[in-house]
Length: 87
Image (tube, rainbow, N blue to C red):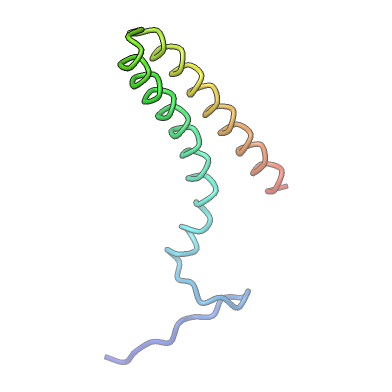
């Protein structure tokens, strides 16, 4: 089998199709991680503080709502930023 040379794209890069698709999806994956990360931090923080302070389930509920809200805000802000970049 003859080895093929990497195709050069019009922008001079030598990325394959899969790598270009992954690079294009990276901002969206980052935005989703902001949403998930905020929720996870809120839930875990509330859980452990409830265990330590004996306030079950109030800190879990409160910090879960705060974490989800913060994550959702970060997600929407990132999506708005991406929308402005596309124009």
